[in-house]
Amino acid sequence: MVYFNRNSTGREPEVIQSTLAFAVVVFVLVVTSLMIAPGADGLLGAYLAALMLGIACNDARHYLIPNELTAAAFGIALLRGLILPNASATSILWPVFRASAVSLPLFFLLLFYRYWRGRDGLGLGDVKLGAVAGAWLELPTAAAVIELAALSAIAAYTANAVVRRQSLRGMAFLPFGLFMAPAIWIGWLSEQLLLRWGYFWPG
Image 1: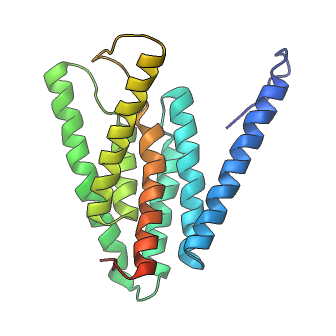
Image 2 (image 1 turned 30 degrees about the horizontal axis):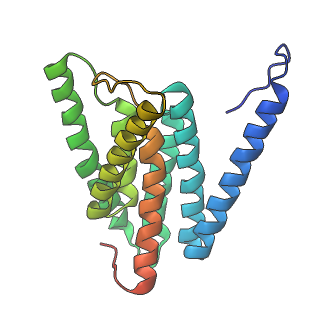
């Protein structure tokens, strides 16, 4: 969230531009979601897009993934399991299972890395975001999303180091949510396109 500081000098135009840019990106993502998946799933996908963009921006700026946003995205995934065609009372269990299947390995990786290196390699926010990926996506797609996010983070860090002529550091701290959150929406969008072409059937 962006706050206006009345005591700042010359900050208002910059904040206004950032807010307008954020609004434009949200609008484009929402329209894209509704065009690719008209109906209830597209509307829920539009909410996912807005939440993932909010997570990415906050993690990039503060190195923090807000619990409120991940909880909202997870809750919408459960709602999605209940309102889509052929949904039943047990449909909510499958997103929960997938969320556990994705987030638990990430949590164990967090614990192992902390024990091995004496510092965090992943944050709990990243683990919770993994649960969101599992709740929204089929397991192969969720695995591809995590791989895409990891490769994107490494590529962005390497490119930034090359541009700034800095050496690569193994201890560098990267906002993983900046890359993983958009990848989740891209994964959802990919599944919708495959479903539209008849190559994908949700489990």
